[in-house]
Image (cartoon, rainbow, N blue to C red; front, side, top):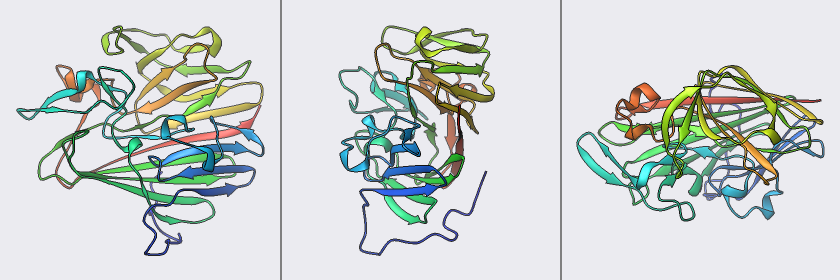
Length: 299
């Protein structure tokens, strides 16, 4: 799944720093991007049919209303906006409604610079300097590749500190809830959560095979094997990733649901063995790569 990131792509003019929108097309697929809104996907359509929750890019106000955004340098909740790393205590700032935790990292709330693009590929980057939201410097690059039957997302996180930093990666796609939306995913375990959404214990989960309307999940899952099959009366999709965990969220009375490939268990940084639950210690100058692929066909 790895490619040379900028081979054959057009670079924007040097004076261009932040691009507000770009579209890619391949066959009947159209992908609209908002680099300035957290490197988010504004929309993905198969002809006129939305594949993800989709908004024309000019009408999108924030990454949180998008079709998908990148998760870095952690996914889901970071408990009570504080953590200890290599003997030092750190805090993060509130970034999600009235939650006592910080959520989804920082990249989704930062502008990305468009580095290069063609009709079917785009690469963008976000450079972070230490601040109240995250105490370590990094760069995260995202490359999106559209083919006539699939969307590939690639992420590369590079540590710009002189010391290791804790890192988790992922993506947060929103799928449209249709009348017969259905999930079939091979899994082994589910993390139960407390009232604030932090994981408490791991329990067996013999897969997911159900219409979304019958599910009530906001959980992280382990033991993901094979493609996650995402289907409804209009589309048949397959989601695969280099990342080993899934967060599945099926909120009641919402027009969407989420199936999110991630690298670690929610709040892994607070667990007794963070590395055993997927959290990476990325050394100075080191890069952590990840990818996900969504194959798209008509039902």
